[in-house]
Length: 104
Image (cartoon, rainbow, N blue to C red):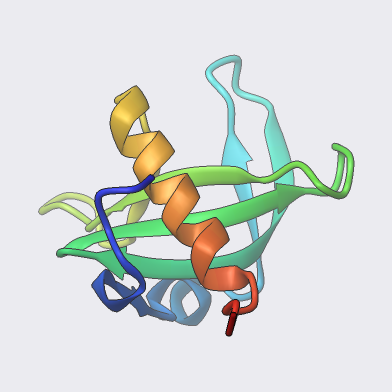
């Protein structure tokens, strides 16, 4: 069970406004890969993005943290969530918020 609830999640669109519905992410080796921006949201002040690569199976998605642009970098930056607990909590919350509410 996640430490967050549906009420903690706020849907956002800042990445979509900045980049559009598609983004390219560069790997450490310098190769770029296209991704579809599926969703973006904020939880307790931290932004996250859900992306799907056109090169991977349809049901596989990437959950990334969004960092605001810094002094030398205007655009936001997408980074891997290194903390396993954070990733698990945010992943569960996203799943919970995208599945229908059980009325029973």
